[in-house]
Length: 117
Figure 1 (tube, rainbow, N blue to C red):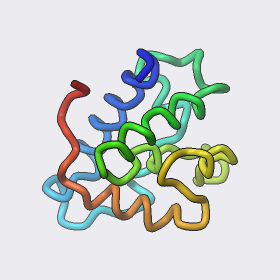
Figure 2: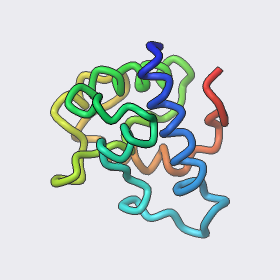
Figure 3: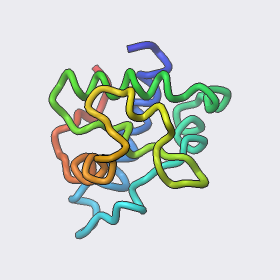
Figure 4: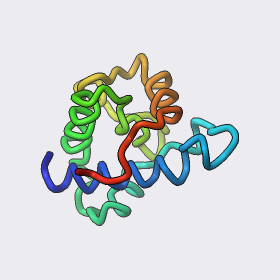
């Protein structure tokens, strides 16, 4: 993964652990687990990346796909639509049609590492 994708992946892992992980609350609400692109980029220290974030989120999706994990990038959404952008379909293991199921699988998954190796 590129350094940018690694930073985004780590920010998504941190977000998942703090907000979505089943042990942090009794029931994770799908909406409460989403993170908008701008906030994700800011948390990753990559604020200038926002217009091109999809390229790096596809790398995160590939990393998840290679490890047989639900796609962490499913949590990242457009601020206005609260859905992933048009490029989501081009990420490995991702489809806009199945996005809600992918988010739910991501929220419920407990096998992500704490840190990018």
